Amino acid sequence: MTKQYFDLNDDFEAIIKSQIKTVVEICKIPTGWTNYVYKATTKRGAAYIFRFPRNDFWVASLKKEIWFNKFIKDKVSFKTVNLKYKKHQGRGYSMHRFLNGFTLTEAYPQMNETQKRELSRDIATYIQELSRVDVSAVKLPLFSEFHIGLARQNDDKDYNYMEIFVPLFRKEKDGLVLVHGDFNPGNILVNKKFKMIAVLDYAFASRSAGPADLAVLLARTPPEFREYIISEYDKTSDEKISVVLDEFINVRLEVEKDQIKYMARCHKDVILPTL
Image (cartoon, rainbow, N blue to C red; front, side):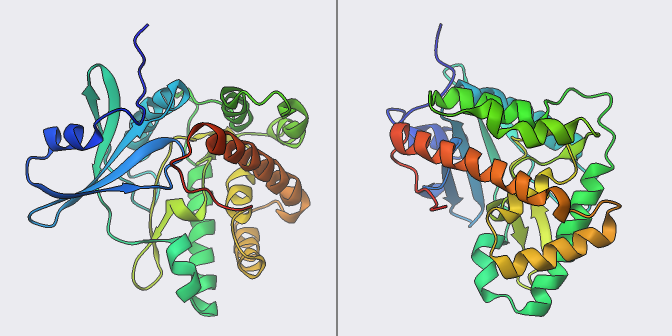
């Protein structure tokens, strides 16, 4: 069977130039875990992002994300990108216009306390809006199922994913809502005034317990910012999040540790975070 994913032997620049004839600059974004990611800029200054999946798991996830981006449009207050599905030699990849802004990872060191609190309010609003979207008529995996699939594709024999996910299994039995699934600071886009304007990368979109997205975010945020986010979330939720949050954060950290081990072993071109 012909492979559906890409690797470092592919001529990504040639593929990109086949789609945009006026490219003057192509640069690789070395933080792409799930895809090989490139930013292309044209003579007129327009910028595009190209993403090429790294393995079969992310091939399937990219197809789901393209469908989901259309589904979620206008259902929440914050923008996302308009993904276009392209093919090269039978293999799918995505292309979209670059959204101007700064990731929360980039912006956070410049923010004052008032801006952090206001952004926390936007974050709480987004999570609650997402949880109210009706997904009864669409097919999405459980958050736990998706991450177990991710762990399995990493082929880590020492990773006891069934034990790690016990808190999620238990909480998901209490009720399910729509979650982003990878709601980390790199997927939150803000403007120059540090207002949240967009959410990126819905490849992990799934159904889970309400705290799932919050746990993903808090696993990657400084302690002082966590307090603001939890406070604003508690104002919008009937459930006090602190009761289950630590367990959920631990699940997320274990998943990321396993993914980092896999990427360091199999995809040495990626710049990885330190947890």
